[in-house]
Image (cartoon, rainbow, N blue to C red; front, side, top):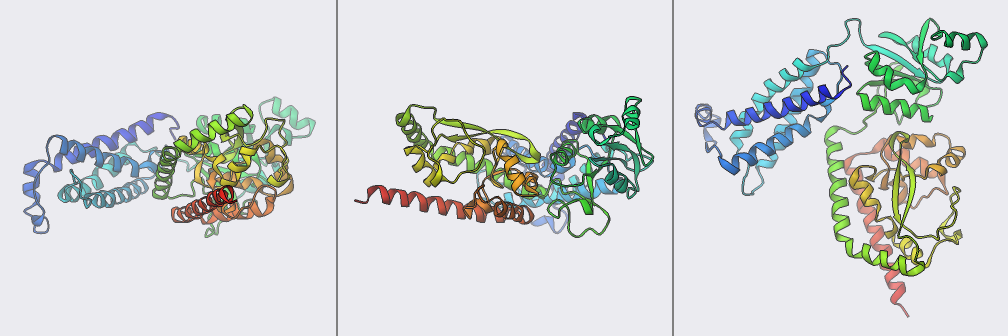
Length: 468
């Protein structure tokens, strides 16, 4: 596996060049004349675009094909048949998208003949390209390492691995005896005949150094921070992740697998849903910031006039896979020392007069649209929790960290049901329910519910303010 950028650059560049070449070929007048001699294609008009029309057609086709091929840009070993099947599936998806675009009536509509002729060309050239540049699987089978935090679990999991097992990674703290510590100093210890390659902090180095194809997770509990750290490394390096069925939660794995070692769904979204979700996030955040810009100015002035303090409030929150990012909100409380213990709004005497209105109308959340726009958050997902608050919620609710499996959101199943961190068990139940059932359609339903709720709360505040 080439975990660097060479494979990614080569794969994207190949898609761009081959797609551009295919569009240029099929828009040749001679090629179109020959194509229309086929009875089925004879009914399609032959009018090769030129100038700006051709440029538009070329750029649209390249953008669609490059976007659809996103999953194949990861440096992952694939056999010839796998590479061909995956590439051809993506070509067909791209053809459907281009055909859909072609039916819209705008100035430079995509000619149907172009779509019909480009598709068979790409069905041959793009799979051939990915077969050519693919990483060849190791001749000895997949190269696998076990990563865990318990030697007994590591040994149990290692016995189930059929591929070439290179060794294992585990924290030094799990090795307790003097002899074991001395063995580590000499270069590593063995558990069940398996060599220890280092601690968990070395996982990224090991993935590159040993050309690893698969990581098998052997953590006693699937909600450990280290578990998600290993998942994050697998995600970044395009490595398959597996886990022992007895040491995983159903939210992490496919339910229909019968094997002892099952695949972890590092990317629970299908690529088309993922593209739709991200596109929706960008559009929603952009439109929201533009439409609310007058309201944002009024809120900023009101906060400043209320107590003269800062307008924005910044806090470190937990993101996907346990990473952290800074979230921004309109300040609704006095800037005193903050407690990590969740407190209901009714019991919080730090909330300012302006803050009470902002919280009732949810307008204090408006700056989070920026976090959505830059990709730290999504419109829909589990609510991002303050990193200092995480430990308290984990102590109160087991498996709390399983919420880390998806990107946090501005709204979600728990948010639309008014479930807050003061009720962590119910919040966790709804967040995990969302993770299991997530889809783009489900997201749209939650967004509609949240928007309806916000509009209702704003109208209630307005009616209360103007009533005698």
